[in-house]
Length: 442
Image 1 (cartoon, rainbow, N blue to C red):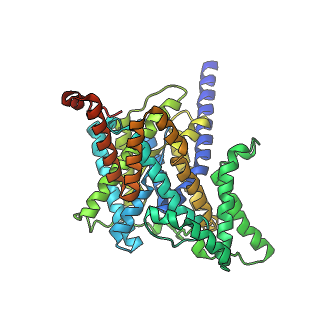
Image 2: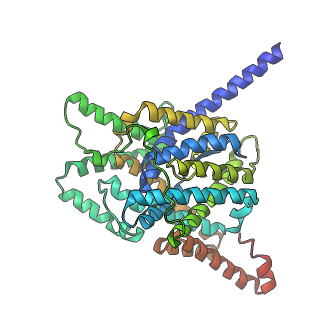
Image 3: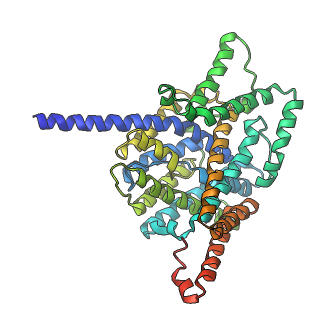
């Protein structure tokens, strides 16, 4: 009897740990899901759909124990380019075409899983991947910085957007637009919260993640104005847009451009980045597992592929394994897949219960979270680490970074791999040795 009671106690304790961890992760997944969708020029709800579908499908069918699935940072630049290119200026139509590309990318990920291509990430040089991530970070930062300071309509290439950043501050000094001034104030304060959050040691403050603090404070500000009986100094153009009834307002993919070259390139780009981001994240999270369990990466690829297909069919973004949310999951005591499932259920609850509050979230607040995310991806410390490894790794890193910034991710990663192979050839001074190292770029 005592053994049975003890077993019941262990099950309850494990369940409570995973419910708590799922709840904490959902507090981060909510603002990130909304923000990553907006950064991709997709409807905000599409990021939440990806997180919910990923949480349910991957927790049931995946091969990892403590990972979290949802929309990923790495795909923002690819999806942004796909929506802009496929829509030809019509962002919503571009989003529908991109949903079709997302569905097909999920099919390809399923195929990679069945073909046991989980070792695919080992093919890419580590420095090339770091260069790719840095380029993604700079791209996110370049676009979102303008929104963070109240400039919602800036367009252009990554380089052009970076060059335009000083102009934003000139505009803020000259403008009398209260919307822009108020949005920029919220954005800059939100960025300060992200930067200094880790330095505040109060254990009660630390119970709530920084992104959720930003949402609580920015939404609370709108209610404060309501309490004072004053109009909120920001129009709906500066706030998150959520449909009245999410279930009856789902978007569905348009396969009308399935034979076009741009569409095919988008499918391959999405598949490549989603697979790399997921495989690298799974590998990193395995190292964090206190029980030292190892994931079945091919099983995970299949689960992520199926989740991506379902998400795309329902109007959601790609589903990938995400390292930051998975790390939070581990740090909050998660022990098994159920934490991923519970995080999805909490997100469903947030969307159904707090729709009115979600519509009060300033775009500038979400942009600040993404600016900080972009900075972390492009962290100068990564470059310093690569410099310590060797000059040839710096060359691979910079080639990938610069080529990606001036062209696209596929061309950038291809250039990085090419430089890595050339370096191998020069170092080996032998065609046979070069061929033997061809699939061992690291």
